Length: 450
Image 1 (tube, helix red, strand yellow):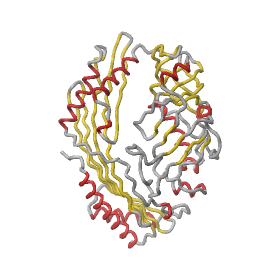
Image 2 (cartoon, rainbow, N blue to C red):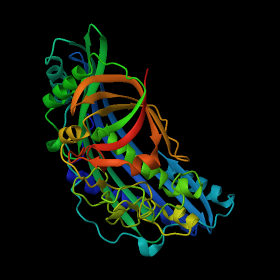
Image 3 (spheres, helix red, strand yellow):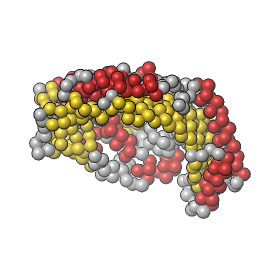
Image 4 (cartoon, one colour):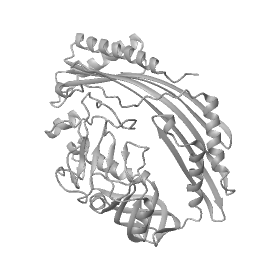
Protein backbone atom coordinates (compact mmCIF):
# COMPACT_ATOMS: atom_id res chain seq x y z
CA UNK A 1 0.00 0.00 0.00
CA UNK A 2 1.18 3.55 -0.78
CA UNK A 3 0.92 5.28 2.60
CA UNK A 4 -0.33 8.81 2.99
CA UNK A 5 2.58 11.19 3.53
CA UNK A 6 3.64 12.19 7.02
CA UNK A 7 4.58 15.75 7.89
CA UNK A 8 8.30 14.96 7.69
CA UNK A 9 7.82 13.14 4.36
CA UNK A 10 6.03 16.14 2.88
CA UNK A 11 8.69 18.61 4.01
CA UNK A 12 11.45 16.46 2.52
CA UNK A 13 9.42 16.17 -0.70
CA UNK A 14 9.03 19.95 -0.78
CA UNK A 15 12.78 20.38 -0.55
CA UNK A 16 13.38 17.93 -3.40
CA UNK A 17 10.75 19.54 -5.62
CA UNK A 18 12.01 23.06 -4.87
CA UNK A 19 15.59 22.08 -5.75
CA UNK A 20 14.36 20.48 -8.97
CA UNK A 21 12.32 23.58 -9.88
CA UNK A 22 15.30 25.91 -9.37
CA UNK A 23 17.48 23.61 -11.50
CA UNK A 24 14.91 23.54 -14.31
CA UNK A 25 14.70 27.35 -14.34
CA UNK A 26 18.48 27.62 -14.57
CA UNK A 27 18.52 25.23 -17.50
CA UNK A 28 15.80 27.26 -19.25
CA UNK A 29 17.89 30.41 -18.89
CA UNK A 30 20.91 28.57 -20.27
CA UNK A 31 18.78 27.56 -23.27
CA UNK A 32 18.06 31.23 -24.01
CA UNK A 33 14.72 31.83 -22.28
CA UNK A 34 14.28 35.36 -20.95
CA UNK A 35 11.68 34.18 -18.42
CA UNK A 36 10.36 30.83 -17.23
CA UNK A 37 7.97 29.30 -14.71
CA UNK A 38 7.58 25.74 -13.52
CA UNK A 39 5.04 23.86 -11.42
CA UNK A 40 5.73 20.44 -9.93
CA UNK A 41 3.09 18.31 -8.16
CA UNK A 42 3.28 15.09 -6.19
CA UNK A 43 -0.13 13.62 -5.25
CA UNK A 44 -1.18 10.31 -3.69
CA UNK A 45 -4.24 8.82 -2.13
CA UNK A 46 -6.65 5.97 -1.63
CA UNK A 47 -10.29 5.54 -2.68
CA UNK A 48 -12.55 2.63 -1.70
CA UNK A 49 -16.02 1.94 -3.11
CA UNK A 50 -18.49 -0.54 -1.60
CA UNK A 51 -21.97 -1.53 -2.76
CA UNK A 52 -24.58 -3.68 -1.06
CA UNK A 53 -22.13 -4.51 1.69
CA UNK A 54 -19.42 -5.76 -0.70
CA UNK A 55 -16.19 -4.18 -1.87
CA UNK A 56 -16.34 -2.97 -5.48
CA UNK A 57 -13.04 -1.16 -5.97
CA UNK A 58 -9.90 -0.25 -4.05
CA UNK A 59 -7.81 2.35 -5.84
CA UNK A 60 -4.40 3.68 -4.88
CA UNK A 61 -3.18 6.76 -6.77
CA UNK A 62 0.26 8.26 -7.14
CA UNK A 63 0.62 11.07 -9.65
CA UNK A 64 3.58 13.30 -10.34
CA UNK A 65 3.88 15.98 -12.94
CA UNK A 66 5.94 18.91 -14.12
CA UNK A 67 4.52 21.75 -16.22
CA UNK A 68 6.85 24.31 -17.76
CA UNK A 69 6.34 27.61 -19.56
CA UNK A 70 9.18 29.57 -21.11
CA UNK A 71 9.23 33.02 -22.69
CA UNK A 72 11.58 34.24 -25.38
CA UNK A 73 10.73 37.90 -25.14
CA UNK A 74 6.97 37.93 -25.77
CA UNK A 75 6.91 34.48 -27.38
CA UNK A 76 5.62 31.66 -25.21
CA UNK A 77 6.06 27.90 -25.20
CA UNK A 78 4.68 25.30 -22.79
CA UNK A 79 5.29 21.60 -22.25
CA UNK A 80 4.64 19.07 -19.48
CA UNK A 81 5.62 15.60 -18.35
CA UNK A 82 4.35 13.02 -15.87
CA UNK A 83 7.84 11.51 -15.65
CA UNK A 84 10.39 13.28 -13.45
CA UNK A 85 13.32 11.27 -14.77
CA UNK A 86 16.23 13.47 -15.95
CA UNK A 87 15.81 12.52 -19.61
CA UNK A 88 12.10 13.38 -19.57
CA UNK A 89 12.71 16.74 -17.91
CA UNK A 90 15.45 17.56 -20.43
CA UNK A 91 13.08 16.74 -23.29
CA UNK A 92 10.32 18.89 -21.72
CA UNK A 93 12.69 21.87 -21.54
CA UNK A 94 13.73 21.30 -25.15
CA UNK A 95 10.13 21.06 -26.39
CA UNK A 96 8.98 24.19 -24.51
CA UNK A 97 11.88 26.23 -25.88
CA UNK A 98 11.32 24.96 -29.42
CA UNK A 99 7.64 25.93 -29.27
CA UNK A 100 8.49 29.42 -27.99
CA UNK A 101 11.01 30.02 -30.76
CA UNK A 102 8.35 29.34 -33.40
CA UNK A 103 5.38 31.10 -31.78
CA UNK A 104 4.16 34.55 -32.72
CA UNK A 105 4.76 37.35 -30.25
CA UNK A 106 1.96 38.24 -27.86
CA UNK A 107 2.36 41.66 -26.22
CA UNK A 108 0.49 40.43 -23.13
CA UNK A 109 2.60 37.31 -22.59
CA UNK A 110 5.03 37.02 -19.69
CA UNK A 111 5.25 36.34 -15.99
CA UNK A 112 3.25 38.26 -13.45
CA UNK A 113 4.90 41.49 -12.30
CA UNK A 114 7.74 40.80 -9.83
CA UNK A 115 6.42 43.23 -7.21
CA UNK A 116 3.21 41.17 -6.97
CA UNK A 117 4.95 37.98 -5.81
CA UNK A 118 3.90 36.60 -2.42
CA UNK A 119 6.48 37.21 0.30
CA UNK A 120 4.88 35.52 3.32
CA UNK A 121 3.74 32.00 4.05
CA UNK A 122 0.78 32.06 6.45
CA UNK A 123 -0.14 28.80 8.14
CA UNK A 124 -3.47 27.93 6.55
CA UNK A 125 -3.81 24.62 8.43
CA UNK A 126 -4.35 22.60 5.24
CA UNK A 127 -2.17 19.58 6.08
CA UNK A 128 -3.93 16.80 7.99
CA UNK A 129 -2.75 13.39 6.73
CA UNK A 130 -4.99 10.44 7.54
CA UNK A 131 -3.34 7.03 7.97
CA UNK A 132 -6.26 5.30 6.28
CA UNK A 133 -5.69 1.63 5.54
CA UNK A 134 -7.79 -0.17 2.90
CA UNK A 135 -9.28 -2.33 5.63
CA UNK A 136 -10.41 0.68 7.65
CA UNK A 137 -11.75 2.44 4.55
CA UNK A 138 -13.80 -0.66 3.72
CA UNK A 139 -15.20 -0.77 7.27
CA UNK A 140 -16.22 2.89 7.10
CA UNK A 141 -17.81 2.53 3.67
CA UNK A 142 -19.82 -0.53 4.69
CA UNK A 143 -20.96 1.19 7.90
CA UNK A 144 -22.02 4.28 5.95
CA UNK A 145 -24.09 2.35 3.42
CA UNK A 146 -25.56 0.00 6.06
CA UNK A 147 -26.78 2.92 8.19
CA UNK A 148 -28.67 4.30 5.21
CA UNK A 149 -30.10 0.98 4.05
CA UNK A 150 -31.31 0.16 7.57
CA UNK A 151 -33.35 3.35 7.88
CA UNK A 152 -36.37 2.16 5.91
CA UNK A 153 -37.49 -1.04 4.19
CA UNK A 154 -38.23 0.92 1.01
CA UNK A 155 -34.49 1.41 0.49
CA UNK A 156 -33.82 -1.84 -1.30
CA UNK A 157 -30.90 -0.91 -3.50
CA UNK A 158 -27.80 1.26 -3.50
CA UNK A 159 -25.36 3.00 -5.79
CA UNK A 160 -22.78 2.46 -3.05
CA UNK A 161 -20.65 4.36 -0.60
CA UNK A 162 -17.11 5.62 -1.00
CA UNK A 163 -14.33 6.72 1.34
CA UNK A 164 -11.29 8.57 0.07
CA UNK A 165 -8.20 10.30 1.40
CA UNK A 166 -5.39 12.05 -0.41
CA UNK A 167 -2.60 14.55 -0.11
CA UNK A 168 -0.71 16.80 -2.49
CA UNK A 169 2.66 18.50 -2.26
CA UNK A 170 3.47 21.13 -4.89
CA UNK A 171 5.99 23.78 -5.79
CA UNK A 172 5.64 26.75 -8.13
CA UNK A 173 8.75 28.72 -9.07
CA UNK A 174 9.62 31.37 -11.64
CA UNK A 175 12.60 33.35 -12.86
CA UNK A 176 11.74 36.32 -10.63
CA UNK A 177 13.33 34.21 -7.90
CA UNK A 178 9.98 33.20 -6.45
CA UNK A 179 9.69 29.68 -5.04
CA UNK A 180 6.31 28.91 -3.48
CA UNK A 181 5.39 25.73 -1.64
CA UNK A 182 1.97 24.29 -0.91
CA UNK A 183 0.78 21.10 0.74
CA UNK A 184 -2.78 20.04 1.44
CA UNK A 185 -4.94 17.06 2.30
CA UNK A 186 -8.49 16.24 1.27
CA UNK A 187 -10.78 13.55 2.67
CA UNK A 188 -14.36 12.56 1.83
CA UNK A 189 -17.20 10.11 2.54
CA UNK A 190 -20.25 9.72 0.29
CA UNK A 191 -23.29 7.51 -0.12
CA UNK A 192 -26.00 7.15 -2.80
CA UNK A 193 -29.14 5.09 -2.20
CA UNK A 194 -32.21 3.94 -4.15
CA UNK A 195 -35.72 3.68 -2.72
CA UNK A 196 -38.87 2.28 -4.29
CA UNK A 197 -42.62 2.43 -3.67
CA UNK A 198 -45.73 1.91 -5.79
CA UNK A 199 -45.03 5.15 -7.68
CA UNK A 200 -41.55 4.08 -8.76
CA UNK A 201 -37.89 4.43 -7.80
CA UNK A 202 -35.94 7.46 -6.61
CA UNK A 203 -32.26 8.06 -5.97
CA UNK A 204 -30.41 10.61 -3.88
CA UNK A 205 -27.09 11.00 -2.08
CA UNK A 206 -25.12 12.82 0.55
CA UNK A 207 -21.43 13.42 1.17
CA UNK A 208 -18.98 15.05 3.53
CA UNK A 209 -15.54 16.42 2.68
CA UNK A 210 -12.86 18.28 4.64
CA UNK A 211 -9.16 18.99 4.95
CA UNK A 212 -9.05 17.01 8.21
CA UNK A 213 -10.72 13.64 8.76
CA UNK A 214 -11.73 14.93 12.21
CA UNK A 215 -13.99 17.47 10.48
CA UNK A 216 -15.90 14.87 8.44
CA UNK A 217 -19.46 14.02 9.35
CA UNK A 218 -19.84 10.66 11.08
CA UNK A 219 -20.12 7.99 8.38
CA UNK A 220 -23.41 6.66 9.76
CA UNK A 221 -24.83 10.19 9.65
CA UNK A 222 -23.83 10.49 5.99
CA UNK A 223 -25.63 7.23 5.21
CA UNK A 224 -28.77 8.22 7.10
CA UNK A 225 -28.80 11.66 5.47
CA UNK A 226 -28.59 10.02 2.04
CA UNK A 227 -31.50 7.74 3.01
CA UNK A 228 -33.66 10.59 4.29
CA UNK A 229 -33.08 12.59 1.11
CA UNK A 230 -33.94 9.56 -1.04
CA UNK A 231 -37.13 8.76 0.86
CA UNK A 232 -38.33 12.36 0.63
CA UNK A 233 -38.32 12.08 -3.17
CA UNK A 234 -40.74 9.15 -3.36
CA UNK A 235 -44.04 10.02 -5.00
CA UNK A 236 -42.60 12.93 -6.99
CA UNK A 237 -44.94 14.75 -9.38
CA UNK A 238 -44.58 17.18 -12.24
CA UNK A 239 -45.82 20.78 -12.04
CA UNK A 240 -47.84 22.82 -14.48
CA UNK A 241 -45.95 25.73 -16.05
CA UNK A 242 -45.94 28.82 -13.82
CA UNK A 243 -43.93 31.70 -12.42
CA UNK A 244 -43.02 31.55 -8.75
CA UNK A 245 -40.26 32.17 -6.18
CA UNK A 246 -37.43 29.61 -6.31
CA UNK A 247 -35.23 28.72 -3.35
CA UNK A 248 -31.91 27.05 -4.23
CA UNK A 249 -30.65 24.65 -1.55
CA UNK A 250 -27.16 25.62 -0.27
CA UNK A 251 -25.32 22.96 -2.27
CA UNK A 252 -26.94 24.35 -5.44
CA UNK A 253 -26.89 28.03 -4.51
CA UNK A 254 -23.12 28.05 -4.89
CA UNK A 255 -23.69 27.31 -8.57
CA UNK A 256 -25.35 30.72 -8.99
CA UNK A 257 -22.22 32.32 -7.55
CA UNK A 258 -20.17 30.14 -9.90
CA UNK A 259 -22.03 31.59 -12.89
CA UNK A 260 -21.13 35.08 -11.66
CA UNK A 261 -17.49 34.01 -11.37
CA UNK A 262 -17.48 32.61 -14.89
CA UNK A 263 -18.98 35.74 -16.41
CA UNK A 264 -16.71 38.08 -14.41
CA UNK A 265 -13.52 36.18 -15.29
CA UNK A 266 -10.94 37.83 -17.50
CA UNK A 267 -10.90 35.15 -20.21
CA UNK A 268 -14.62 35.56 -20.92
CA UNK A 269 -14.33 39.34 -20.79
CA UNK A 270 -11.42 39.90 -23.16
CA UNK A 271 -13.02 37.45 -25.60
CA UNK A 272 -16.23 39.49 -25.22
CA UNK A 273 -18.11 36.30 -24.34
CA UNK A 274 -19.78 37.54 -21.16
CA UNK A 275 -23.02 39.28 -20.26
CA UNK A 276 -21.00 41.27 -17.70
CA UNK A 277 -18.97 43.33 -20.17
CA UNK A 278 -18.29 46.78 -18.64
CA UNK A 279 -20.23 45.74 -15.52
CA UNK A 280 -17.50 46.46 -12.93
CA UNK A 281 -18.69 49.26 -10.67
CA UNK A 282 -22.36 48.69 -11.47
CA UNK A 283 -25.09 47.30 -9.23
CA UNK A 284 -26.07 43.73 -10.10
CA UNK A 285 -27.58 42.62 -6.79
CA UNK A 286 -29.79 44.08 -4.05
CA UNK A 287 -28.10 46.69 -1.87
CA UNK A 288 -27.66 44.33 1.10
CA UNK A 289 -25.88 41.61 -0.94
CA UNK A 290 -22.11 41.10 -0.64
CA UNK A 291 -19.50 38.50 -1.60
CA UNK A 292 -16.03 38.59 -0.09
CA UNK A 293 -12.99 36.60 -1.17
CA UNK A 294 -11.10 35.22 1.84
CA UNK A 295 -8.11 33.20 0.61
CA UNK A 296 -6.52 32.66 4.02
CA UNK A 297 -9.33 30.83 5.85
CA UNK A 298 -7.86 28.05 8.05
CA UNK A 299 -8.68 24.64 6.54
CA UNK A 300 -10.54 26.33 3.69
CA UNK A 301 -11.10 24.22 0.58
CA UNK A 302 -9.96 27.15 -1.56
CA UNK A 303 -7.29 28.60 0.73
CA UNK A 304 -3.85 29.50 -0.63
CA UNK A 305 -1.16 32.11 -0.05
CA UNK A 306 -0.51 32.74 -3.76
CA UNK A 307 -2.21 32.08 -7.06
CA UNK A 308 -0.91 29.89 -9.88
CA UNK A 309 1.43 32.70 -11.02
CA UNK A 310 2.90 33.36 -7.56
CA UNK A 311 0.86 36.55 -7.04
CA UNK A 312 0.00 37.09 -3.37
CA UNK A 313 -3.63 36.46 -2.51
CA UNK A 314 -5.46 39.04 -0.40
CA UNK A 315 -8.91 39.27 1.15
CA UNK A 316 -11.15 41.71 -0.69
CA UNK A 317 -14.70 42.23 -1.92
CA UNK A 318 -16.01 40.83 -5.16
CA UNK A 319 -19.50 42.28 -4.58
CA UNK A 320 -20.18 44.97 -1.99
CA UNK A 321 -23.60 46.46 -1.28
CA UNK A 322 -24.86 44.90 -4.50
CA UNK A 323 -22.10 46.39 -6.69
CA UNK A 324 -19.63 44.26 -8.66
CA UNK A 325 -16.41 45.74 -7.33
CA UNK A 326 -13.95 44.10 -9.71
CA UNK A 327 -13.33 41.38 -12.24
CA UNK A 328 -11.46 38.10 -11.63
CA UNK A 329 -8.13 38.41 -13.39
CA UNK A 330 -4.85 36.67 -14.02
CA UNK A 331 -1.87 38.71 -15.21
CA UNK A 332 -2.52 37.81 -18.83
CA UNK A 333 -6.22 38.63 -18.82
CA UNK A 334 -5.52 41.82 -16.88
CA UNK A 335 -3.05 42.99 -19.53
CA UNK A 336 -5.56 42.18 -22.27
CA UNK A 337 -8.08 44.42 -20.49
CA UNK A 338 -5.64 47.15 -19.48
CA UNK A 339 -6.08 46.31 -15.79
CA UNK A 340 -4.08 44.67 -12.98
CA UNK A 341 -4.07 41.08 -11.79
CA UNK A 342 -6.45 40.38 -8.91
CA UNK A 343 -4.43 37.35 -7.76
CA UNK A 344 -6.91 34.95 -9.33
CA UNK A 345 -4.81 33.02 -11.84
CA UNK A 346 -6.22 29.54 -11.47
CA UNK A 347 -9.55 30.65 -9.97
CA UNK A 348 -11.12 32.21 -6.90
CA UNK A 349 -10.23 31.44 -3.30
CA UNK A 350 -13.01 30.99 -0.72
CA UNK A 351 -15.91 33.24 -1.67
CA UNK A 352 -18.17 33.99 1.30
CA UNK A 353 -21.72 35.19 0.59
CA UNK A 354 -23.14 37.34 3.40
CA UNK A 355 -26.57 36.16 4.64
CA UNK A 356 -29.54 38.40 5.37
CA UNK A 357 -31.89 35.68 6.64
CA UNK A 358 -32.05 32.77 9.06
CA UNK A 359 -32.63 29.06 8.56
CA UNK A 360 -33.97 27.36 5.45
CA UNK A 361 -37.18 26.60 7.35
CA UNK A 362 -37.65 30.27 8.16
CA UNK A 363 -37.08 31.31 4.54
CA UNK A 364 -39.68 28.75 3.42
CA UNK A 365 -42.18 30.13 5.92
CA UNK A 366 -41.56 33.65 4.69
CA UNK A 367 -41.79 32.52 1.05
CA UNK A 368 -45.11 30.81 1.69
CA UNK A 369 -45.58 29.28 -1.75
CA UNK A 370 -42.98 28.38 -4.33
CA UNK A 371 -40.31 25.88 -5.36
CA UNK A 372 -37.41 24.49 -3.33
CA UNK A 373 -34.77 23.15 -5.75
CA UNK A 374 -32.59 20.30 -4.48
CA UNK A 375 -31.24 18.96 -7.79
CA UNK A 376 -30.21 20.56 -11.08
CA UNK A 377 -29.50 18.82 -14.38
CA UNK A 378 -27.97 19.91 -17.65
CA UNK A 379 -25.71 22.81 -18.58
CA UNK A 380 -28.22 25.30 -19.98
CA UNK A 381 -26.44 28.51 -18.98
CA UNK A 382 -25.30 30.97 -21.63
CA UNK A 383 -22.62 33.27 -20.20
CA UNK A 384 -22.76 35.49 -23.31
CA UNK A 385 -26.42 36.44 -22.86
CA UNK A 386 -27.01 35.38 -19.24
CA UNK A 387 -29.89 33.12 -20.25
CA UNK A 388 -30.48 30.34 -17.72
CA UNK A 389 -32.48 27.14 -18.27
CA UNK A 390 -31.87 23.88 -16.40
CA UNK A 391 -33.70 20.70 -15.53
CA UNK A 392 -34.61 20.54 -11.85
CA UNK A 393 -36.18 18.53 -9.06
CA UNK A 394 -37.14 19.43 -5.52
CA UNK A 395 -40.27 20.22 -3.51
CA UNK A 396 -43.36 22.33 -4.03
CA UNK A 397 -43.95 24.55 -0.99
CA UNK A 398 -47.40 25.45 0.33
CA UNK A 399 -48.03 27.51 3.47
CA UNK A 400 -44.27 27.53 4.13
CA UNK A 401 -43.93 23.74 4.24
CA UNK A 402 -42.95 21.08 1.67
CA UNK A 403 -46.22 19.80 0.16
CA UNK A 404 -44.86 17.14 -2.21
CA UNK A 405 -41.71 16.31 -4.20
CA UNK A 406 -41.48 17.39 -7.84
CA UNK A 407 -39.42 16.24 -10.80
CA UNK A 408 -39.17 16.55 -14.59
CA UNK A 409 -39.40 20.34 -14.54
CA UNK A 410 -37.26 23.12 -15.98
CA UNK A 411 -36.46 26.42 -14.28
CA UNK A 412 -35.60 29.38 -16.49
CA UNK A 413 -34.66 33.04 -16.29
CA UNK A 414 -31.81 35.43 -17.03
CA UNK A 415 -28.89 35.72 -14.66
CA UNK A 416 -29.05 39.52 -14.57
CA UNK A 417 -32.67 39.49 -13.44
CA UNK A 418 -32.03 36.51 -11.16
CA UNK A 419 -29.16 38.35 -9.46
CA UNK A 420 -31.15 41.55 -9.01
CA UNK A 421 -34.11 39.48 -7.81
CA UNK A 422 -32.34 37.69 -4.97
CA UNK A 423 -34.65 38.15 -1.99
CA UNK A 424 -32.77 36.23 0.70
CA UNK A 425 -29.57 34.37 1.53
CA UNK A 426 -29.88 31.97 4.44
CA UNK A 427 -27.47 31.42 7.30
CA UNK A 428 -27.15 27.63 6.85
CA UNK A 429 -23.86 27.62 4.94
CA UNK A 430 -22.70 24.61 2.93
CA UNK A 431 -18.98 24.34 3.77
CA UNK A 432 -18.16 21.55 1.31
CA UNK A 433 -16.87 23.98 -1.29
CA UNK A 434 -14.67 27.04 -1.76
CA UNK A 435 -17.92 28.96 -2.35
CA UNK A 436 -19.51 29.44 1.06
CA UNK A 437 -23.18 30.29 0.90
CA UNK A 438 -26.50 29.42 2.44
CA UNK A 439 -29.70 28.85 0.44
CA UNK A 440 -30.50 31.60 -2.07
CA UNK A 441 -34.06 32.72 -2.78
CA UNK A 442 -34.82 34.25 -6.20
CA UNK A 443 -38.09 36.17 -6.11
CA UNK A 444 -39.42 34.98 -9.48
CA UNK A 445 -38.48 32.44 -12.16
CA UNK A 446 -40.36 30.50 -14.84
CA UNK A 447 -41.02 26.87 -13.95
CA UNK A 448 -41.87 24.78 -17.01
CA UNK A 449 -43.58 21.44 -16.49
CA UNK A 450 -46.70 19.80 -17.90
